[in-house]
Image (cartoon, rainbow, N blue to C red; front, side, top):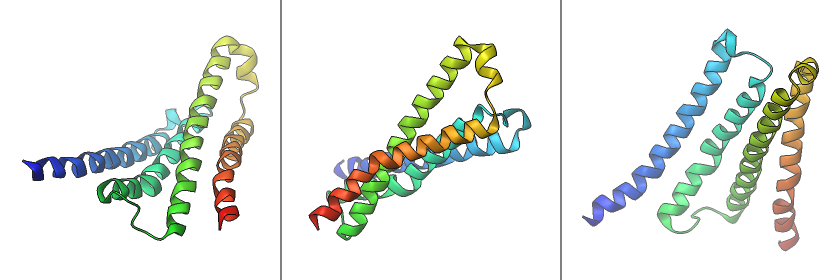
Length: 149
């Protein structure tokens, strides 16, 4: 019975990881391949899917490894990189959701005025701002490590 429970504690996070990777790849492929989905509004969704894909590829595997082992088994430099990427990508994901919410609100509140100002360049700049804010917010984690060592 104990082996079954141990197996489930490993299997469930791996299934979540696999579902995250596959789901976000499908979102990206849908936007890329379906012409009707290639619009300015979906740039945010594409960027969010890429961010969540990076969480699944760079953060979740080491999180699962740490969860299974009970400690971080790699060198402390990798722990720092993992922590910085975790903070960066999770912050970016949250910031993307906020930006999507604000974009949707403004589109509904001011449909004619806001729609006229929605251009490809402005959307790319907004996504760049989301990433810049995310990097700025995650930077203190790395700077704290440099100060400690």
